[in-house]
Structure formats: structure tokens, C-alpha cells
Image (cartoon, rainbow, N blue to C red; front, side, top):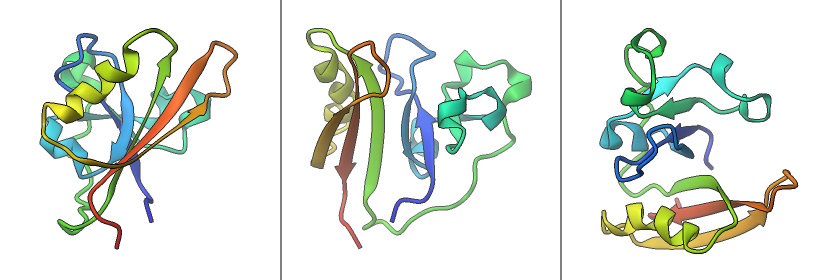
Length: 128
């Protein structure tokens, strides 16, 4: 069961402040930094948040992310929100495609905002 999610921004995204949610093991592989929970919007305070180090002032960076690592065969879930426009999902999934990550599941749901935003949940790896 996924217990810990983090926000992260792939290096391929053009906006350094872009972020999404993923499991903690994704942080070291993407060279990301943690964003304190106090700087998150209230709706997402239940998650730890990370952002690309270039997007954060140095005093907000934690010394190191938690070392909670799953076994190599564990499943990873990534969730992210996008605004409805042509090609935006393809742009988001290109970060995974460029890393040769094979998805096992993708799910979409309308977000709770009235702006035609959507939340996506993407899995890769094996379930235990």
C-alpha cells in the first residue's frame, strides 16, 4: 500500500515550479528537494512536498529526504493534476517515456476545482 507521497518536478518540464506527486524513492533519482508541509496549499497538507532545487530558496531545503525505500519490485504511483488543453497529458507522460518507464495503470478523475482540471494516477512496477 502506498503510504508516502511526494511532489516532484521532472527536469524535462520547462516550468521549474511544476510539481506532481510520487513515492519517496523517486526523489533521489530525480535530484529533487523537499518542500516543507507548511508551504503547501491546505488541500494537500497530508503529503510531503518536493520541488526542483532551482525553484526553492536554499533555506527551505531539508538536509536530506527520508530514507524510506521500497524493494526493487515495489510499485510506484505518481499522481498529478493538469488543466484541460490539447496535448497536455502527452507532455506530462513524455517524462516517463523518455526514461523508458513502462506503465501498468493510468487513471483519470475530474479534480475538485471548477476549472476543468483533471487528476491523473499512473502506476509502474509490480504490486507486492
